[in-house]
Length: 152
Image (cartoon, rainbow, N blue to C red; front, side):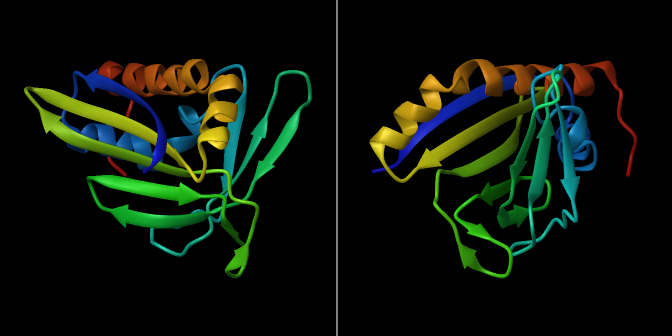
């Protein structure tokens, strides 16, 4: 049984546009404003580093090292914090899975956080999962629907 939290949105933009924004403009939607995210060395392939640092408006800095678990072009990608560096185990919190699929004349976006335990899922919910991941989803929707994307 997975201990999953999720957020979904319908985006009034074609899947190719949504995928482009999700992957080539990830820092523009990844964390709720006024926070910002910076990815270093991100390669879109399984096994690559997925190191993200989040910067808060009051000088907060949160490093989030991780690994790309899956990358299926145009469909989904997944990160985990359970593996860092050169296949070093880390105290696992979750596996994040972001996927899209064509739906009507737009795209269905789904972001899922799977946790090893019910307690970890509950902790993530209490940390503000719904508000935080919903804000990110809304930022992604706004970028995609405004056409603020560049074929990359």
